[in-house]
Image (cartoon, rainbow, N blue to C red; front, top):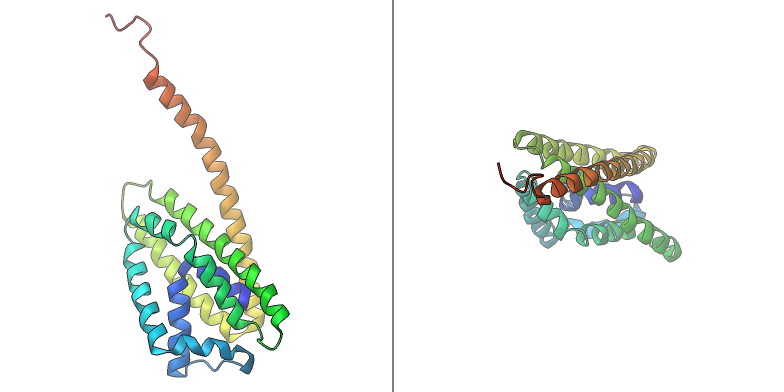
Length: 203
């Protein structure tokens, strides 16, 4: 469960914090005793702060290149948030396991964040805004749905964590190949613009 929530935080940190806190505040979900640390998310202050962050992220994520700037700013915020969420989910009665969950939690959030940011940078190269909005809405829906499933069933949470990890790694590998293909093309274009005409410019 800690792994799945951390991975989802790499996509939508504020949504994970706000949705979990709101569900606990409204009594929609009853957390087990060992997840008592998550009760802080139901605090009005945390709900207010995460709600503002959620609204800002929802709008920023729909605007081409603004979403990339937002992702750049959150390169450090999302991994830290994912690590802290993992820390509160793991049983506090076992500090050793909390530390074990803390480190992979931050790494998982960073992995998901990298895949998200890279994908959105590629989508932003499209001149029309529809694809950007469609991808962003899909991320919102998938994150919310998987978050509910993760808290509802630990087995499903494990499947989600494995699925998200494989997907994030696959996306990063695809993006790496795309970058390798784009570099020779850019180099050839720059060389073409820099080279003088064969006849010295005289017609």
